[in-house]
Image 1 (cartoon, rainbow, N blue to C red):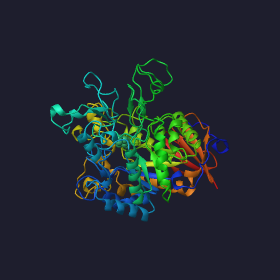
Image 2: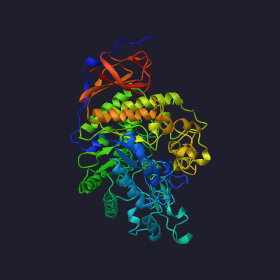
Image 3: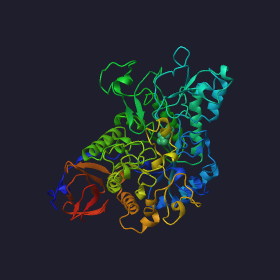
Image 4: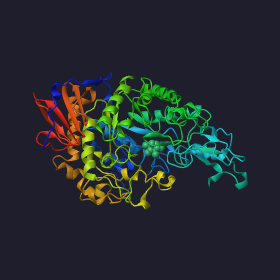
Amino acid sequence: MSTTPRPPVAELTGEVIHRPTTGPEWWRTAVIYQVYPRSFGDADGDGIGDLPGVTERLDHLARLGVDAVWLSPFYRSPQKDAGYDVADYRDVDPLFGTLEDADRLIARARELGLRVIVDLVPNHTSDQHAWFRQALADGPNSAARSRYMFREGSGERGEEPPNNWQSVFGGPAWTRVSEREDAPGSAWERDGQWYLHLFDASQPDLNWESEEVHEEFRDVLRFWLDRGVDGFRVDVAHGLVKAPGLPDWSGHVRMVEGTEVEEGLAEAGDDVAVPDASDDVATGRSPMFDQDGVHEIYREWRAVLDEYDGDRILVAEAWVEPLERLAKYVRSDEMHQAFNFDFLVTRWDAAALRDSITGSYAANDAVGAPTTWVLSNHDVVRHASRLGLDETGKGPNGIGAEDPQPDAELGLRRARAATLLMLALPGSAYVYQGEELGLPEHTTLDDSLRQDPAWWRTGHAEKGRDGCRVPLPWRSDAPAFGFSPTGRAWLPQPDSWAELTPDVQEQQEGSTLRMYRAALELRRELGLGGGQLELLPAGEDVVAVRNTAGAAVVVLANLGAEPVPVPEGHEVILSSGPLTDGAVPTDTTAWLRPHS
Ligand code: NOJ
């Protein structure tokens, strides 16, 4: 096999692209595991995961070696958007258990040394929330309506929506009250106001100009802080404040990757004349997201968290570009972390990854915040499948049986390599449930089983996110692979998952589960999360970095066609796949240390 000349990595002087951010706080270096409660573990056997099912399985996470658990919403909700439609922020949905179950989960996590982060959904409530029902009942100009974004329609009789905004899930972002079955009054008395919903019609947007809304959320924060949670992941953190006057804007904002400006409209930097051109339109930024006013809200919340002991945190879910604007959310008096979706959507391309890594540190270091890393979550095609598609990057919103199928072997190989690169980087990393098993997306789900509102609202153009939310497999020989005691599961698991259960992977040398455990153990032992990072010039198709946390660890991620030899004087301490003749093969990452 031909190999390129050995890069003398050991002698290379790298360019320092990150110096450790100040402070010993746990969240600067933490590995945080996302639990999606309906699909993690089901204790009561109804086929839907629940809080006792999580508590029973927390040992798995302690053994994996993560620092904290983030739970997606488990609050009272009609589940129109899998719990991101909250009807009561201070109660647990009976589907998931009770408040006492939440307390038990938090207590058990504490015993195991795991912190607990819960989800907060402040952009919108469910339409079943008491506030919204009251707003419908009380009618136009009522105090109850002022908590939401009600407006008169346009057109002669108000029959057109107030503006042209599109919902993130597809279709118009406005629904007229009179179109609802639960509209008050008899047909001729019904008022014709419209309400804004950036997501599903069952998720009305709150009005963050209302002081009552501010008070309510400060109180909700305290409710959960008093119960002992360590922080909040803030849903759609960039959405709460809208541009004054709600100006028309014809772009579409896609989940996770952010703004997409339709053809014919201004691209960032163009000075194309567009109707109702505002600054936002001219820069390609939407008037519904990332408005400067949101930052005041997070300063307010930070002050609430700072009243509590124990280093509680706020994590922004914000699809904001460029990285410098995202970094505004993590200035020292705002949130602690923001998800780095730039990294998640980066193509499997060494130069693009280097740019993303370098740019992420530059933006976050400038404000003294840790950079975070994430490859999968409940909104995107799992990275073991995404990286096996012809075109890598954010990927489609879901994959169906008739779509081009990912190359499973290639996807897993790259996913493991991407993970080892991620876990060697200083900062905080997020792991989505099941990725430690190398789970692929379910790409052949029967359409009749789909539940994501995006599937309906796009007229079936997008398959939606159900394929990354399939219940986890725990035991190869049990019904529903041990997800529930009855064998029920709200979505079917692919048969091939029998090979991927933890009991099987425990026994397999080199399994994905064992790789994650080894990586997390080394990361902790070597202090990689708090290291300084140098970018090494090791070839166009290689991402080569040196993490100098105490003893230096060199990380080589080879995305090129040629194997990259392990540099002299170095030993491999971990790799995402087997080495060939002392070289790191294509789509493989290795962690190296100088011989002692
Ligand atoms: C982002 C969440 O991650 C996603 O699952 C949800 O549908 C939207 N926000 C709306 O809350």
